[in-house]
Image (cartoon, rainbow, N blue to C red):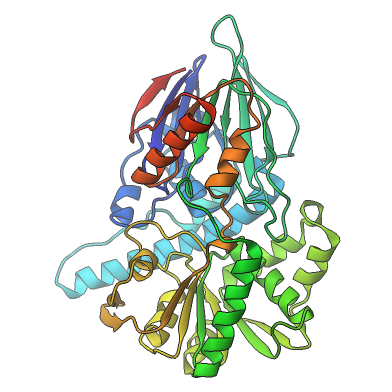
Length: 460
């Protein structure tokens, strides 16, 4: 087998791995990039012929893993996209949302060019029609079932515990006398995450393609994180401000709803108004509710509770309703996407609240290099939002315990399930993080490691 690392190599986003074995070509993930030069990068031609790809294994629905699937189809892909049932439901709504953004961005760019006197029409990266075509190639696959593709290749998805429907991929192949096995970790969830189950761990492999998003740091405990959340809300409201939470519509928002319900039930918060300013988040929450087989009874009950004594959860549906939130001067908890502040409605809420010293911004997920969220977390005094310089005077909190990713300790524990000394390809982390984590693997287990460069190919 030959494996090429076409994304998430020494960086966090843009997951895409190309496999060639026994005259068969496959991809694991086909994601968009985020951060600096992302839009230009996503428009590059694929480093393979899409019409020759027979299978795409999708580990989960987040856009940095799934977001270029419609472009793949647009360029000639006619194979099968293999993913879990819940991942298929979530990926569908996320891709439609992404296509809507692509079309609006292209329309805005075209208008801007024409105002400048240029006879230019900017085409979207892909359209809603492209997404409709893409969904036709989905093939829903159950967890824990071994399936054969022919030509000496078989595979199985197991629960990665990251978001609903997320998977670790086990792939067996035989292109020599002995069968070999490669595992793609996908994004590995941390243990004890709200709503979904803990990650499963394969027991053997010859090779592992391993994520390392938090490979050189540890999270605070969930208890510490919840205590910090409560303190941030109470302090902010006492100061007369709002709490702004950039959050991914899929996964993190549902976890936060669960946590707020628990806090009110336990009497740690009372009489709070939580505004979910994301139509996508509401759709995702309904999909979470439609897959009770993936979480416990208490979670199902809590997620169904959109309003209870002392807690009021409001979903906004229209742009006008979203704009009305900016008229609220204090006492609001506003959750909006995108999680890294690169687009979506969160930027409007930052524009109206980031300069106010009585307000707070709570980051509850990873912020990739080059994103607006990362600049704020790194201590920028001013940031550019919608062409306007905005002073950063609000209190900034980074609460890592709410991350859906395993930290260094949990990643190492996940690897500890392997007793056969596999070779580990360290991906899906920033450059220094991948180097630190590879060294930690060597020190802890003595496994051989490699840190691929983008485009690098290995014969395994």
